[in-house]
Image (tube, rainbow, N blue to C red; front, side, top):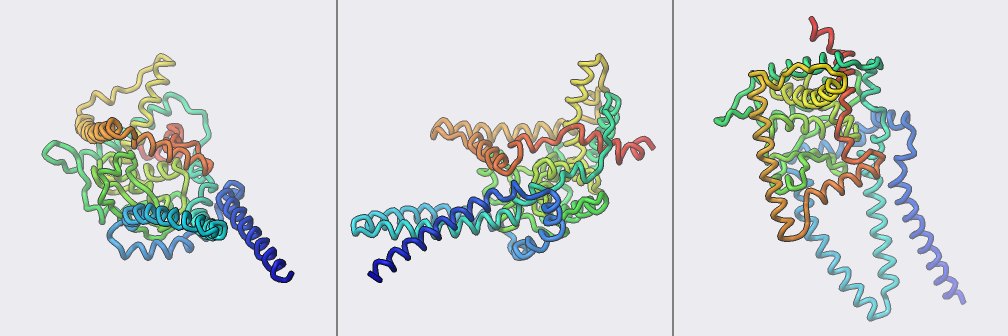
Length: 395
């Protein structure tokens, strides 16, 4: 009788453990959606720098991407592990020991999943609930006019062509970065920190070492040019083609993730504005380039609707070097798309579309509006200009 009672008690405890682990995992996954903004702000400003510091400090000692190596080694090991698990499961079924085996397997998986969920929330998820950077900047709320757009467009144009005139070129007339990857990555840390300090944006001051990815060419098939790994606190950059028009933005964007901001809109906004504030022409060029081409089509739409005219900046001689950089970037991605299409024809899998859908689902699961969140609303740049840059631009 005692033996039967012990058996029942053991089964009950196992059921309780499984339920507790499952509920804890679900709670860990969903908890950031219920965290108050004020609590997230306190966490991101005061606690996140200390929590993220150990992983970031360890990463500093490795020149190569730990994330890339874990993926390259982990995927085959995971596939092998699943095969071994299935083989053992079949053997357990044959020996009538499948139920305890499934219990232990599920328990172990849930323990690991719970740990992963907690680390993700601590290193990234909670930061989705932080106050938007546009609100931190306290931008003007005046109703924007066509003249405001034109003034901001002129500011971005002048900054872009001025910075471009200071850049070195290759034999095709394409601009390139002024310094090495390592030096640029170190510089970007100080640039983001300096921008945060100047505009009172509470970014973490931790130094984060960005890593180049050796398999970047194949990574380009996903159309992803940078990634922050919250589990290792590591910033990874696609270095297959470091386009002068987007590489500095991508570098600063991913560093902003590692410095406590999760929103893609916030990180793109911080990256573009930080680049514009840079003394280095290559970073400054990328920042103003991003803003110029964000505002220009909107200004043209307003002009068409109201019967007004946008200054024809695209016809100026100063734009020709910019167009060379644009054409080089377009050519690179066109070649990548051709390779992706070839894989699709042979294997029936469109890597870019799968990547985009996966990223969209991930962002939506964290309260974002999907991949659309990468686009900074044009009005924010105009309002930043009116709030902080108009006096200097008109001086």
